[in-house]
Length: 388
Image (cartoon, rainbow, N blue to C red; front, side, top):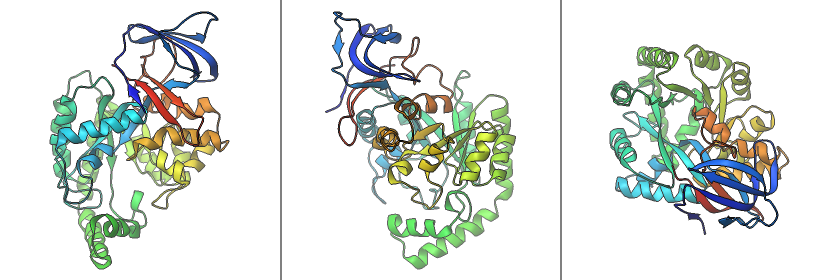
């Protein structure tokens, strides 16, 4: 059972295995004052705590910078959409059970889905407004603005949305182009297979649909260029934090750098990940890819990139429960030590999002805390404190 509790702003948590950025303190005490960590140190003999952690692993609340779980909760299967408020509360329970205390929900500003199908779940505006109106002491819900660079309607709506945000907000924006034949769908048959399995098309209809997408989007190259120029200007001025989705080549990475992007998200090849590291971009990979031991789309293995030191953060992508197990699997496999693996799901993604107040068990950081039992084959989250 996982508990997410509203706790006092001042308390002491004792007898935990605290995962610090560079080491593990086996019997630690955390002192929290005014909702922030005031001290992390070995537990003094004879001192009692407000909460006894009973030797559980204590780590910072997980930060997820790219979650499509909310969109999937709204539309659990083709043609079936749920009430927006219910879907958000449902996915929040899954986030808490996974130990995620900060979640960037991907809201797609586009007229059709990534595979070119009509979107019959709530619109981007509907999703955005419901998410922003939701109040929670469990999860800090935020928005990852996902933009199809060839969709003029999506660009228009994103421009309006960004203009409506307070001046002190620097939104996270991820741009993508899912045209089959490049990027995530470099092999167009991968999209065809998805259309058959997830959308119920026949093989012949899926192939025709993919061919039509390629033809249609080839007519929108001017829109793509105009959109990228606009995003680059915004990022250069510090008005957005820009993320490039699915870079496949060094040329793609060069374009990210030229466009003032800060992050390369889901590089599809090792060459792209290496180029991103060389050019100073942060790199995000998928936790599910790590758990599966490879990409479902036939792209580069996230585990291979992690082992090569080319990944700064893991993200759940669409399965919140995968985030902590992926980190622990890297430890079990001997790929990295526990503190380094935990950084991939805490301070690493916090840096990707430009957040400097969370993701670390250290003095001055917000007390987003997770207690987990790691004695079994898979970790189990026992308690979450994500108050903000």
